[in-house]
Image 1 (cartoon, rainbow, N blue to C red):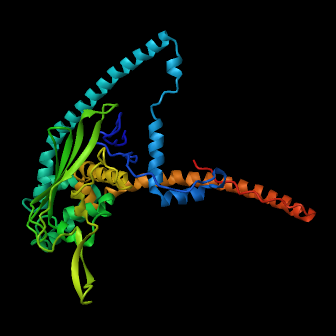
Image 2 (image 1 turned 90 degrees about the vertical axis):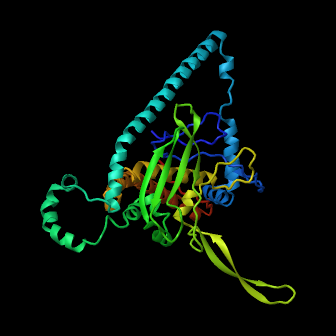
Length: 407
């Protein structure tokens, strides 16, 4: 039910509702300048050459997408050629569609209100979870019994006394959120070894809805040697108006400024460089800060391009989509099922989806193999013909092998 995120400039933008994660790439247009390339003859441009060309010229891809986008919505002249009475009926159907869009917008508004209603019921459970994770309280016997699997009860009770003796000095669940995040695939890719030391001080991750369409993610930290913030937040905003299908349209995100302590900024690294004086020829070593990969870059989100921005990076679409997806993963996956990510049980559902994709891919491979066998047979026939031609002294150029079908 997910839909792509649209840029501000789109006339009819469509975006996922706040509770859904987009499955498609976000078509956020870039403003790359038109590159200059030599003309290419159509007959000499095969697939490999084209792929190589586009890989070396991302600006060319953006230009082509822009040209194709300009054709969208243009009339073919068919509607205008219809009789007046028929055009009147077409206009009437458009009016009905507008009424449908109003109801869709109302539906999405009510869905959001229902989400907020149940979020209010979830909140006490999240608060209870935080107290246990941070060692402020212990779970009740009924909570423990409810969480244990029946087949594991005997073994768990048998080891209860040993566990109590071993863990008597351990408060709460150490590194709960760090472990949960490292099991969540999209987040794990962002966490570096340096980040882990800071994320060990993470005590809670929670979210809240805004008065306007949107939500805020809040990361709570205990006192730590990296930064002075007790909480770091990131807010995702949606446009005030709804999209064509009544969905909320992603607008932009804003993050909290992190107050890093001296020499503790994890988003940069220190590099030493030599400088030579032109006059004295003496050299000296200077230290400069260079941006580096870090999970904490999450709080400095990329911004959509403005209408007059002609110097947008070519990867802005991918960066915006990734940033939005991460926010949705935290909101819809990590926070509601944190214990399942901590234990790794949530990975079963992720792997199930991957296995389904692999099954589909295997079927496609089988079809490709059949096609390849047919191609081999045809190639063999051609080889026989070509050999006979060579014997006659009238050899013909070999044909290219047929391509595998792409389903």
